[in-house]
Image 1 (cartoon, helix red, strand yellow):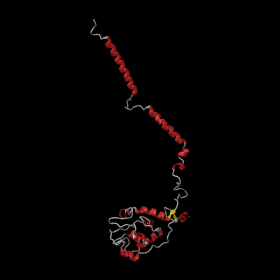
Image 2 (image 1 turned 135 degrees about the vertical axis):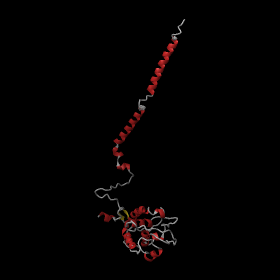
Image 3 (image 1 turned 45 degrees about the vertical axis):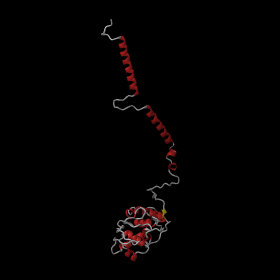
Image 4 (image 1 turned 180 degrees about the vertical axis):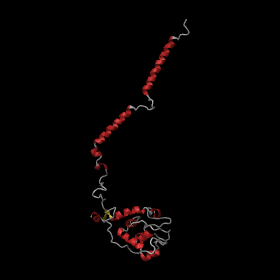
Length: 253
């Protein structure tokens, strides 16, 4: 008769087999996914392989640095490099006077957008500069309006809100540029350039008023300013320095 206190042989074998199977499964799991004490998994081999391929590709590209960093290969055709601040002055190439003045004037006109709008058509309580008789007409009159502002009826006979003086802090170059821009934008096309010298004369005329800086009226404009500003006309196609607006020949001397 079998002793009931001794384990059955089959049961002992089963326990041993189960124990060995558990050890094998634990080892397999450890091999498949090991987490170190810091909680970070080791980097997979495929990541090392991918990094190696990237390094090889980068090496190949750098090996062709003669074309990779070749100026002629990396910019659009016809582009001309221009150095600034070199010992030779690094001046920008000259451009036609009308373009240079208008380009500078466009930046200054940014202060006028709030009233006259980006397209120069005004709106609400502000008159349009597009197709404005006073904007494209006599340059003395237009300069006086810019420098001193306007009160009362405009060129259309309509009365708008009072335009404040814009001449405070404005240089002669600023005045010349913004006048040139307005007279050749928004559909306006006088084709002329208001030079810095003309604008300087306009400032002298404005200062000679009995009350400089106060808004102009239609009556004062009609009585004293229906004329062109003094100064030698400038050929719109004449080449000038785009920064100083000086004639290219004078700037080169």
